[in-house]
Length: 450
Ligand SMILES: [Zn+2]
Ligand SMILES: [Zn+2]
Image 1 (spheres, rainbow, N blue to C red):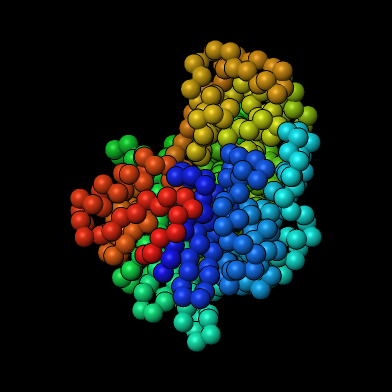
Image 2: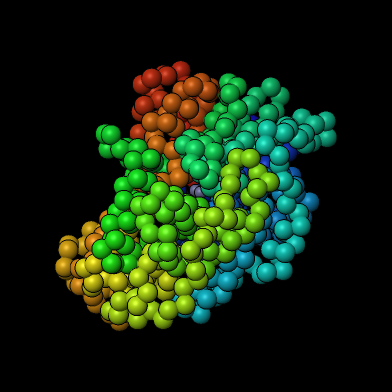
């Protein structure tokens, strides 16, 4: 098989893998880089040409995995577009939101090429998505030479790993994965067979959890910290990514309320895409076995209507679960932080990854009581409120990923979707424990025979 990583850099970036099995061309994922804008955010799609793809397999609905799908679908009108159970509708919803954000960014940042696609192309693409039932194999190619099946990957609703079998060789793409089960999503349930080639995400390769810390202990610490602020009469802002983290935070608040930690009538304010997705999932997830988001998790959740004014504390005390997770300027979480920051009864709790050059990372490292600037709001506030972060990552810990790799004993491992440092950690570990395994850190855009 011929493999090309179409990500433009050796980092998390935009996930896109081109694989050729004889005459068949497959693309696994076609994301957009979350930190870049315009054409720069796209993976190296120009290497593919038009009409060359037979199959496009999307691992999940995060935009760094599916953000460029309308472009790929349009350029490849005959390609099968495959997605895991429950993922198709989320992909469409995320793309529609992305289209709307691109419209705003066009005016704000003067990006001429935005929007890169329109609602009509998302609509036509949505009719083409073929749902892959978990573990169910489909054959492609004239003599059915390529077999493809999807397996639950944990991580977020509908996330899947993709197994491809061609001439007795099994190639597996993990996508983003999480082995832990939560009350909402079952952990990854990947094929147990021996794999020839494993293309694996390495997001958390440069980081290990401190001794004694687990995801469960972090969830407990988060709920206790929320409860303390609420009991003392403050408000808490939890900046959250829309898909996955927002629903998990609703779920944890519900658990904390059910166990009496937080008063049942404590209001939870939310808005935008995160709340939209939660409302949809509450209606639809009963039909899936690998994930579930109960209606009860939305009890007490109300749309945010209060006007947000920098420096003026919210009149309504409660928990504010708002996008974006990294407090990007011009988002509700950014504005809410400017309202809450000066009041020491309040707290801002981060529950996901914060890129070093985002306001979230700036606030996490800001000394207590120091000035904190919100340039887009022309406001500087004193960081008097409590600020903390909780590791509720939906990616597997690096020790779990390493165990998974060694367990499947592949002939070849391709390390992707992580910083160079992250990939190197895996490379050295694998080389030391299993020297016979071929380990590859792919050069962006370079085709290689695997
Ligand atoms: Zn993801
Ligand atoms: Zn990802």
